[in-house]
Image (cartoon, rainbow, N blue to C red; front, side, top):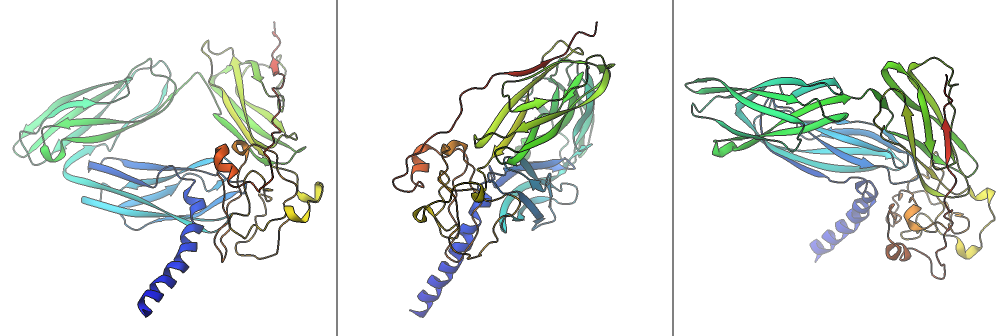
Length: 441
């Protein structure tokens, strides 16, 4: 009887701790990866992508591995609302052999403390060696063909063969050429050619080698590189979290190896404005265009697409994604709510995403603080699809429930207080805002 009570007590203590980490786990698309069979010396890594789904700023305090066979890295430690980053798990194929597994622990300290465990595993073959560790094209100008080689050596079977090389990327031409065959060792040169019509952008692919070895019938070789276009530009601009009436300015970088002019810049949303040099200014190889976003009364996630045209190339440049999140004004700037509208953020299920007031992203509430009922202000009229939840702070009674971006109407209605109908404050389309350069001639 005593043992049963002890087990129940331990379970009740552990349950809030486990659920308190859930807000952090929701940011990851996946939390495990199997590398399968890989060869000694080959570059082997996997990126665990995660996204800040919350109003508060996010900070990665650290990342560690339970085994030296895996080295973890973080691509970006500070993330604002909707920004993304990666936890990179690098499999150490140079120093380890056989089946290996590791737990990568990611620690967050803002807005609240949490840990997320990521699992990796794989089998490293020691009798197959790849030199160099991957096929690297480096930076290649668009329209240029280039060829690289790697050597694949098998050290135990004299009859070992590469039967086929497969890849989903049609921009590669691959040819295995037998280099040497001797007792106990077989070597191949793998010729990998990048076609000249390959599109601009980063290359991150794999070649899958098919062999006559039943124990390692298939194994991958990484291919990396970047096809650089005549003109390159920022892929996206993140303005962070703002309140109605505030502004934020970020640079849009446009560059080329040769001098050029920007002939047109356009955005359908008038809240995004631009400041460009005069068209009479001589052509340059680098432009830093200030882009300003001015928040209006419309709250929630704001997305815009900025298109740019230049005189350096005839093909169209990809649009630049601009995004911001507008949260309601602080409570002191709005009418005080009635007593029955107040809710405590420290109690579970007390802060529905459709009606909660988001906390200031620069000063999140301390976890576990019991300061009485919060003043969330009047109910937010945004639809649930445009609402970003606040990360749930851990407390003695469990974390506050959160509703991530993209919650359906049915799911969000379960978090809406009784008697409160959802209203919409979404604006109709706004007129186009564009800038067209004058002809210097």
